[in-house]
Length: 491
Image (cartoon, rainbow, N blue to C red; front, top):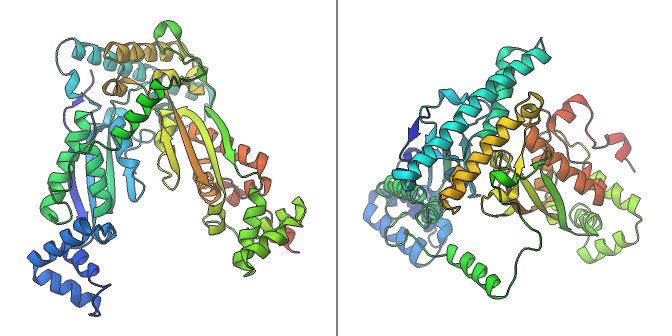
């Protein structure tokens, strides 16, 4: 039987200073007061009431929100469903560390699943519990079977290695009700936005988490988290709903049919790496990148740099781009000029892969709702070990329960890690290179690595010289990195 969590838990575990309000109030005066900063902060510490008055006036009444970024806090949030963790970690200007289902055996989790308030009584509870219990039973069966398969196929493999590998793929059968914990460190401005977004959610567990987070932060720094300004808001949900209504009024519908997701119409499993499609990019991107490099390194006006690059053939443009890699090592970040070159992708990936993809926050990303219509991802190990039918039947049940519970936002918590999500993302070449360093590395999880490989392949197809910089950190260590050695870069 599954073990239940009934409420999110929140605790502030650290702050950058004992008195964050004094720090922000003192910093706020720098632009208008020549007094040394330490003295400004000390004066704010000596007069808390005045510091709070200044904070609220400057941050919220004048709208200088960046002042609140000087106050930093660390929070622990646990016993929450994975579905909720996505709303937390999608905030870009924060540091996160999250419970990993790849490394922590599921049986060691104290509260394994979150039971939403909407499903705690009557038929809804019976449906929810039955589906979760079945998914848990399937997880244990698939885990044991995959472990045995690996030990039989690879006799020299350590049992702990086989179990970790089996855990990694067996978890695809578990629903987004699976609990997790997240450590968050960020500033007061970002925390205020996070709390507001949570409070504005239609889902009770999201709102409860926002309320608890606010209840912990407000007493520490009431002027940075004032009740008057931090509360539920209709936007952005109101804007999303208005666009949806307008689309319906104009008769705008999807041209491609979607799978029902029901057990009777089982969608085909996605291949490893889901579906990656490059939908927009700059056809002359490498030329524009070369011009930006000349603007910076050769100190040329941009108009001259572009004129010079226009007279170069593709090979010479490539030489300019490749020159920017000289001395590049595994932990280096490519030059900032690469941020001027952007790629837009439409990607269908598993929920399991998306929980890793979302951690790369310096990109623009839009996600569709969690839905069975996006299909499924079948882990190859599960198929090879002979458990494909067990896996598919369990996801069938989770989808049937999703529909029986109303197929709305509340029911999304019933979908599995193996269900797919459709996203639209825009990332620059610099972020792509950084993404590839971690996710194309041989130590990366197979699913997200397949996504990384597909992204890299798409970019190499249109911008081969940019693609040279992509690859996992392991390729630098074993000498197989595509980046050309210094001797080949010399003029």
